[in-house]
Length: 285
Image (cartoon, rainbow, N blue to C red):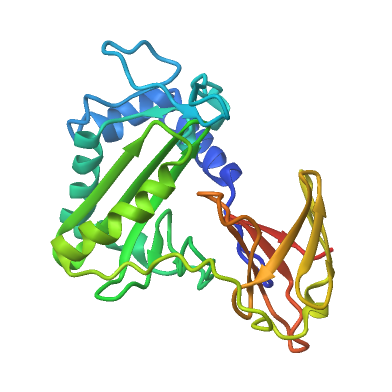
């Protein structure tokens, strides 16, 4: 979703697109994907959570104080086009990446459509791909985040290469951040920056400009300012946000997915129009 003030990721857009594909093809989403994508690319190891699986697949896990706990697969078909019901393998995802590297007509999907920069996530948004402006890049890719699982795919068209990581744990992005810098540097000479999480007092300037209510129908944060940090109160409780730079704040350095929040859409007064929690932009209301 993109408005004059900000951009936000939305699963609803993918689900609407999936329904359009069903209408045009006269097939279910799974049938259409099988015929139009999986079969032509020989991705015969890929299936869906709501279909029988011939071979056992790894079960997703969530960490708890008593150790990892298995979680049930996400099966609602309504979210399938957003990728939530897809079950794939390293081999098949490499086949998918090769398709994007070898077919020049797909390069248009890597053209920037929203120059949004969200700390720890992306430097621009394209058509289904995020762009990362790393040393020696750029690099394109996207992540899958489902309860108990994390998936990472990075495309390096200038090197005709790709790197894929599949994990059956909800801390998979922590593994990604420790492993990919080594692999990208060794294989492609790409410098993936380390995730910065050390607070920098005073880096955001006047904290009062961030105060306000940022909300979407299913999520709401009320932000107030103190002398040294922001206080964010929402459905998840109250958290302190410490400035990292002029638009980013650390909220939980131990969280592998959302250690920071980022503000964007700054007006002439320096006040932001949106609060990004992960990739979801909550407009100031």
